[in-house]
Length: 68
Image 1: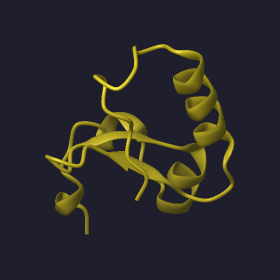
Image 2 (image 1 turned 30 degrees about the horizontal axis):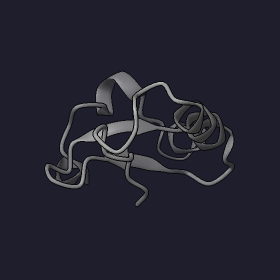
Image 3 (image 1 turned 180 degrees about the vertical axis):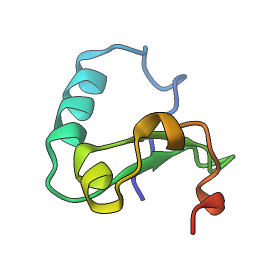
């Protein structure tokens, strides 16, 4: 699974972050972003929502290991 770049590598809101988020949300492949250290879900894209039928507000901040 893709992971968000560490905040200490470059400032949040950088052009790279904006471009990545735009690409992530436009991808036709269901994808979920989780923190490497904690497995906590950071974001899901619309394809993920469509495939699984789960709303982002019900998934974000949950541990990826908690999903069936």
